[in-house]
Image (cartoon, rainbow, N blue to C red; front, side, top):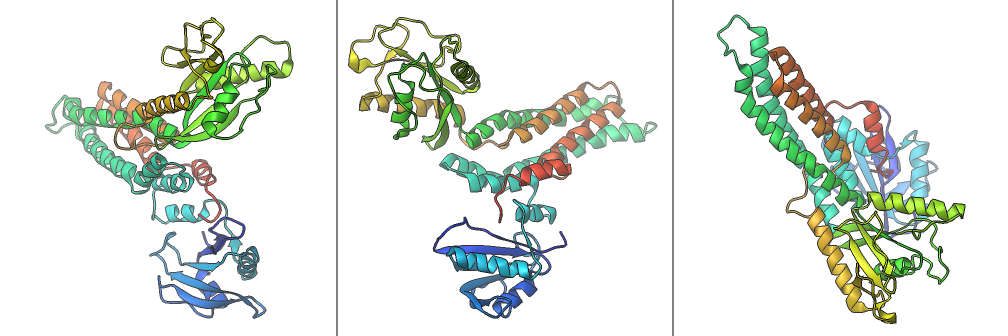
Length: 430
């Protein structure tokens, strides 16, 4: 935290504009060295940037953000350059020559967290917003960045302190006139907390699925039309299609957007018994991916009368393919062909409805990551223990442990390895 860091905040390569960020104690002197003098705070100023040898690096916009009124809470600056790779490289080299250090992934946002500008849940919202590919992901990330989970956590913590004060009064002042059944006084608060936190914990799984994508597996015997359907839904040749059985050996994942939500569609190896070691591994992976999927689409050659495999449940889709080649006779599946625009439109609409039913539901979830869900469930367990504790001392300790779990959601208490893991997922320059 004592050194000054820098990084390009825009993607590498040629572009109209490239942004280089600097933060730390030496940010001001660095601006002075390159731009001649610091501009007025938060006011873009056109300057000639010069390297250590006095040569002109670029004519750029320079912005100066004195701390603590900056993203990181430290003295910070931005150089908005012409986006040629040579220009960006020249400015980065000049900053390194001044003794500044290239930032690690997520280090700017970690400094914002360490300086109290963001809590950990909001910092995760920053990462999610950068990674957002769909409207649903964007809305969820903005809620997280705006502090929705943080505000709920603060309210829960205040209620926990209220409940804790009841138990601690019975422990610290046993001779005073305190009601014998202190749990009864704390029960309404604890029961309300349990209800609210349980709802948030249940939503964490939905939030994670919005982030990672609703997973749909295409499964069936070889040559059932899985790869053809994948290509049709992806609108490109993502998988090889041949008449040779067993062409697909591995899981091929294709991201899609349906109804504003991210979907991961997977073509898998044909399910059959085989002595081919490579194909057998592909079948194993197909079954494993299908088992973890949110929805499975079973495809069967319409001329075959076989029943669905054990992997298929009543809620999964069943399609009798190759309807265009003749009247399907399979009694277990809906006639379908990927070559028909109307069939494809029906399937896409059906999939969109399934995705919305699973991931929709009004407002984005309060908790959006598995980490959040695990900590909320830990707090729930402690609160349930507090309700059934035989002694006020035990109940007070359970409430304290619940508070500690909630504090770890927003990073009030977080081991360094958790912080390292969270911020390592960021891109460099953020």
